[in-house]
Length: 217
Ligand code: SF4
Image 1 (cartoon, rainbow, N blue to C red):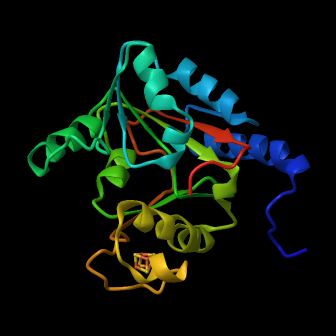
Image 2: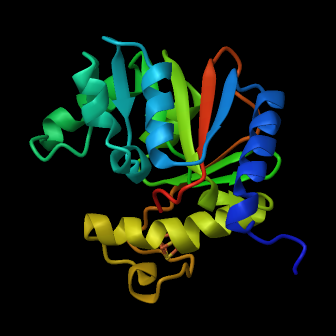
């Protein structure tokens, strides 16, 4: 066994609970573990109050959990920019609405053992909303995104999260063809802003739900 190996299924719960304690120690107001996706969605619906505004950036995890529809069903107004009806003229206002909502609900490209959220973004709106925002933030992160340290977390974001994201938006980058990063200079490069949230940003109320089941990229 190497120094770090992804835990077997029977130890996932223990990892999730240990990481929750670590996340609280670095400033998250709550950090809870859900073994199953359905349970994670339930916790998210309990965390975000009825009737508030919710901003959802580019995140597959939140969509896989069906949370946008579930938030809307409990009277929340959900802002997101994967809406095909948006035009270049209206997209900017939607991005601003996302980042100034009562709750910003997102995942993370990776999470390290010591509680650092590592993210790579193209436009920068998602990482901006994670750093500063008017509202509270809820991270929902699957344990399949947990990495040993910041270096391996960046590698995960580039080699594993980015190629399917480029394919999703129809971009043409080397990683979309190769399946791994070559630190390209492509016009379609979506690795443009890298953030490492080491501690919860000052003045921000942040919560985390970790999920045992694989979700997102
Ligand atoms: S730098 Fe280029 S090749 Fe590497 S992951 Fe980002 S878009 Fe893909």
